[in-house]
Image (cartoon, rainbow, N blue to C red):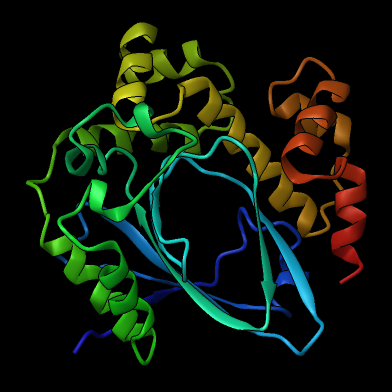
Amino acid sequence: MTTLHSVPRPTRGVVNPGAGEKMFRLERYLPEADLAPFVEHFWLVAWSLPDGVVHVQRTLPRHAIHVVFDAGRTAVFGVMTGSFEYTLQGAGRVLGISFRPGAFRAFLRAEVQSITDRQLPLSAVFDCDDVEAERSVLKAADDAGMVAAASALLRRALPAPDPVVEHIAAILQAIESNADITQVQQLADQVGISVRKLQMLFKDYIGASPKWIIRRKRLLDAADLLAKGSAIDLASLAQQLGYYDQSHFTTDFEKLVGKPPADYRRSCQGN
């Protein structure tokens, strides 16, 4: 029997999390030890809405590969460079596997950028029947059963851990922990690797460029701050994120989140 170890309810990357938590249950569970070199976490969304109620949830992309078990839409999702909207109505549940950055390279056995902004059937990567794999996860009685079924699928194709994944983790941690890094050259200097090698590494293992990841991380930080009602001055925030001016920040933020920063902050405070 699988014992689930949950992590705190995530809000980062969920647009208007205050409104969302009224509409669906969102959980994250840690993988068992043998899957930990490959899997960051399992995530689960479950909902049961009254008749006539429809909720459209926007999620902001990160640099992760996901395997998603969703009735009729189960697939491997490469890094998605645009935001993602999902319509919730009636009742349902979806289970996802979020892979550690770089770890899916060993499963795919190809350059990870080859599946950026693409979906693949499970059978293109794993030794499985797509319909049966979806059924085995979604028919499970509870969260633990769903995670156990998805884990079993991974174990049938488990490769040897790749030491490059830990190297990538250290590079991404440099971005996460150092707010002053807003340019690729700064990151290259910080981790002691040339810009060219850094770009090639990210293309092969992550599926997104260092520039994209740096900028997206900063925009996610901004969205998180504003969702919590931070009173930070928007011009100052734009400068902190490495933008030349507030207008360029506003354009990028609205394209990703769907609203300008000031409007987004107000909408989140209204929940």
